Structure formats: structure tokens, C-alpha cells
Image 1 (cartoon, protein in one colour):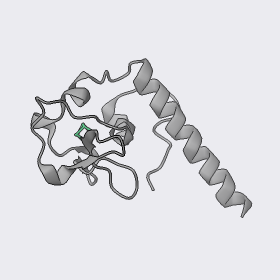
Image 2 (tube, helix red, strand yellow; image 1 turned 90 degrees about the vertical axis):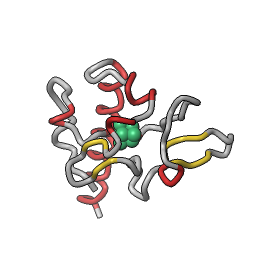
Image 3 (cartoon, helix red, strand yellow; image 1 turned 30 degrees about the vertical axis):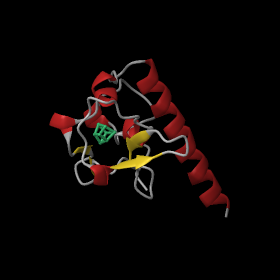
Image 4 (cartoon, protein in one colour; image 1 turned 120 degrees about the vertical axis):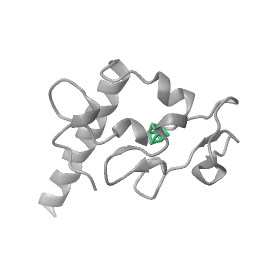
Length: 108
Ligand code: SF4
């Protein structure tokens, strides 16, 4: 599990984030050229980026927390605005989830 300390406060920047946006569902577009082993089908038959067991996109380089296919990343990822309202919202939600997990761990 990744620490949450970099998500709670301050101006968003990828260098100070655990790539929380890479936990979102990325629906692939016809123009995306993503290797099949990195993709999955949803119950609604949408082609998406696959996630690992911890919820991160399988294309994420977990050691550096960078996109491992940055040059060929999906269109949805290219359009995601760092520091935009959606970025802030997912960071806050992630930080809240992490705080709740810590509270539960401390109580048990
Ligand atoms: S393709 Fe790259 S930028 Fe897009 S969610 Fe996966 S790791 Fe993140």
C-alpha cells in the first residue's frame, strides 16, 4: 500500500503524487494502440486499461510511479489535467480512503 502523505495538502504535481489518477478506469478509444496484455474488458464490454490487484493501472512503473507507456499512453490519459478539478477530487478521495484505513488499523 502506498503512503498518503503526498496527497492531503498542497498544489498537485505528478512529482509529489502516487499516480492516483492511474487508479481510475481508462476507457480505451479506437485510436489507442495499447498491447492486449495491458487491457481488460469490463462487464459492459468496454475495453479498458487493466488494473493490478492493488488497483493501479498495469502500465504504471511501480518503482518510479511513472507511466511505463508514456509515449503511447491512451488518449484519456493525455487529456487528464494535472492539478485540475478532477485531479484534486481523486487525490482527496484517495487521501480520505487512506486515512480511514489507518484509523481502522489503529483501532484493531
Ligand atoms: S496508461 Fe499510463 S498514464 Fe494511463 S493510467 Fe496507465 S500508467 Fe497511468
